Image (spheres, rainbow, N blue to C red):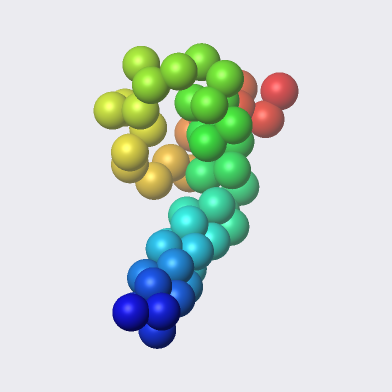
Length: 57
């Protein structure tokens, strides 16, 4: 049981790491955490850094 737990934990951390390594994902995660879940549906797609310059201000 412990081995399965660590496997799931590793997979979950790996997915989180892949999502947050992008600069846009890091800023989106910070903004959605502050503003709430109302912005989650429109933030699911990958956004190019140049298309949303307001995220970095």
